[in-house]
Length: 227
View 1 (cartoon, rainbow, N blue to C red):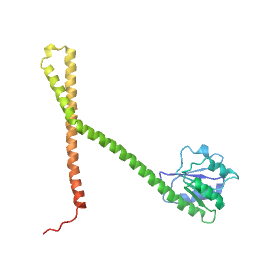
View 2: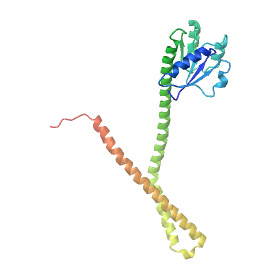
View 3: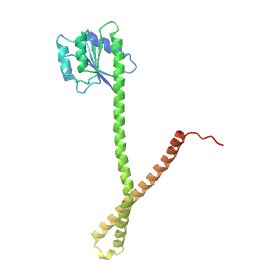
View 4: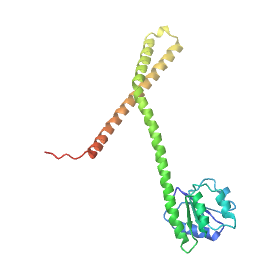
C-alpha cells in the first residue's frame, strides 16, 4: 500500500490524531494527508485512493458530498441515520460507514486496508494491460519488419550494386558526386548489416520459442503408457 494515498477529512483534531497514530504502527503505511472541511478541495492536488471522513462542522457534510465523485472510495465515520446512509450509498457505491464507537479505529484500518489493497491490485492490472498493449504494438511492428525483410534486402542489393557500378568508373564523376555515391554505398552497407542482424535475431527468437512450445505441448498432452 506504499503507492496509495489516503485523505483524512475532518474538523476534529483528536479524530485525525488517533487515526494517524494507529496507522503509524501498521506494517504498510499509505501516504496520509489530513485536511479540514474548509480547505480540503484546495489541499488535494491529485485524487486520493481513499477518503476517510470524520466528524465535521454542522452543515459541512452535505457540502463535502456535493463535490465528491461517485466512484470515490469513502469511509464515513459518523453517527448517521439509516435513511441518510441509504441515500448516500445509492449515489456513492463505494461508501462504507463506521459508527463512532470504541473500536472505530480498528474498523477503519481494517476496511481501509481492504479498500487500498483492491485499489493497488486494480492499478497493477491496468499497468499490466498497458504494457501488454505496448508489447502487442511492438510485436505488430516486428512482424511487419519480418514480412518486409525480403523486399528491403532486394532494394539494398540494387542500391549497393548500382553504387558499386558507378564507383568502377570514377573518371566520369565529379569529386562531389563521387563522395556522395561513396556515402550512399557506405550507408547502404550499414543498413544491410542491420538487416542481417535483424534476421539473426529473429532466428534466435524462433529457436528459443520452439523448446518452450514443445514443453507446453508435452505438459498439456495426455501421458501414453509405453508398451
